[in-house]
Amino acid sequence: MGRILYAYLYAASICLIVLSTTAQASSINTSSGFNMPPGVTEISREVYSLHMTILWICVAIAVVVFGVMFYSLIVYRKSKGAKPAHFHENTTVEIIWTAVPLVILVLMAVPATATLKKMYDTSDAELDVLVTGYQWRWRYEYLEEDVSFFSNLATPREQIYEAEEKGDFYLVEVDEPMVVPTGVKVRLLLTANDVIHSWWVPDLAVKKDAIPGFINETWFKVDEPGIYRGQCAELCGRDHAFMPIEVKAVSPDEYQLWLASRREAAEAEVAGADREWSLDELMERGAGTYNTYCAACHQPQGQGLPPMFPALAGVGMSVDPDGLRAHKEIVLYGKTGTAMPAFGSTLSAAELAAVITYERNAWGNDTGDLIQPSAIRAMLESQ
Amino acid sequence: MLKVIRSVLAAFFGVQSEANRQQDFQSTSPWKFIVVGVFMTLVFVFLVGFVAWLAAN
Ligand SMILES: [Cu+2]
Image (cartoon, rainbow over all chains, first blue to last red; front, side):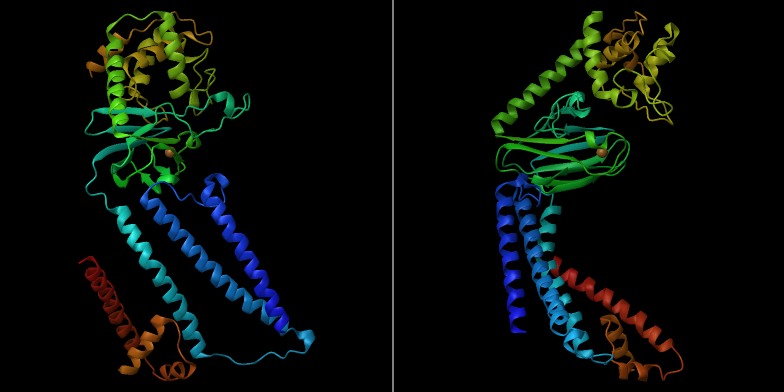
């Protein structure tokens, strides 16, 4: 009997040693994928240590419970002549096995509540960023800085459809990352434009729902420069897996430079509506805009996915010479009751003009229509 | 009365001895257990609220 107990304790301690070395290895190499990352903020490290503490409590309970169970199974088996005891209740034992878990739960709740309180404390933030979830991209608005932009998936379609080798940051790379200064408490105000999304970056220990009509608050403060990646964590439609998050933490000086470059780019975009564009220019710009904003539903070759997402190549208003007005209106104002959003408030006049021109001239839709950004701007301003 | 409170507390905790259970079922009406149960639930809610208030201050 003693031998079985020793064998069990021996096996259990070996398991513990293996587990704890794996845990240590994974905290060095966060990409092992077996554990949550310790992350790069004070809060994320607290969350990680809470997680590990509770894991080890669970492991200890499992060792004791399964130990007693297997010991009884083996030592008091029927073939050894064991006779079952016949008793119905034992109030003392019942009180003990109710009170012990209660005490353990309360002991775990105390540090967990302390960390939760910190996570919810968004006071004294130095930077406010409004994050809006769209199908299927994120928009970042730096409220005090007059900077606002969309952040789109940057992974090429060829990688998604297996025509190319997948990159290191497959599906977790964007065209414009959210840039934040290090050492600054950043408050996020989260909402959504269409359906519920969720902004999740494991390294920051932030996962918060973005709900239309509501504003959720959370915060983070990164100490070390770096790029931290995440994804939308609330099923939000066909491209749910294709709206990643990339947070780039840089020094405060670099952050100021970035702000200036964002403002400059925004001004250049607005100024783009002042001049005449050639067909080639519009087609090139339009192809890029189409692939980022339209191709998910209407497909890269304009064939659509009927009946949900109509085709644009060869049929409908995009090849109809008299359909130009209707075409502009549906792109700018959307179509209620369908999945077609209003892009008038999302894209710049140049992007809108380019994408409409592209749709009317690509894939054999040779209408020859050339839409100038200035015309789109006039349309938007008349609203 | 004290016996009823004891039984309600045992129900809150989830463990009751067979002897006490037999005794409780001697009673013909369940109403005193229901009334004391509702009252004790309110007391519990206020107690939790009070502890939360203490922690917040
Ligand atoms: Cu989403």
